[in-house]
Length: 159
Image 1 (cartoon, one colour):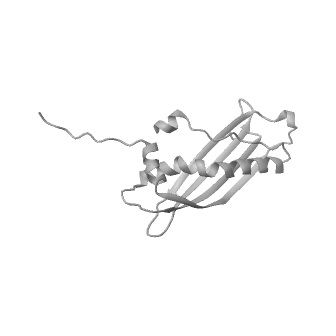
Image 2 (cartoon, rainbow, N blue to C red):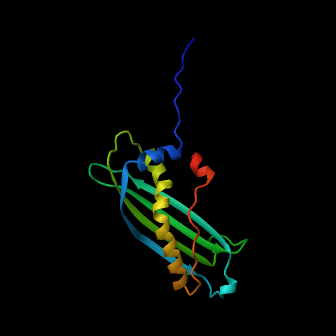
Image 3 (cartoon, one colour):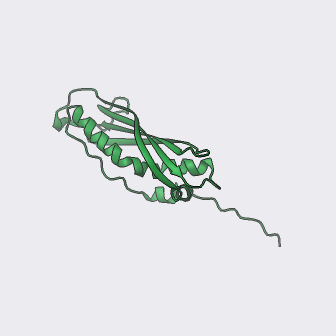
């Protein structure tokens, strides 16, 4: 009987967990931001559909350099049928997160990317919520409070 070696494929959540056990957040910086309201809106005319997107990129640590995660958050407040480009309200921000990392042994780009796509979002979410609330008020609109960031089953399963 020929024994074949079965290699376990780690999920994104498992890859991110390995990194999260080795890092400490050292700083969060708002690197870029914008907010726009295409037309004067009365409070009762505010669109009700929130479209949120996120994108992260990582810069691998080397030597004593930290792990850097750039996380771009975008919010489009629209009415049903509006495209992202024609959404009356658009708020965007890029946050730079720096993490001190204790040990990089065995870590790959896949580990850092999985961490940036999952754990870094948790770290930046309170700052993003505050920025959205402040930006909507500065646009002359009622302050918009985003909901808490919650795990979804697909996030936990790494899909």
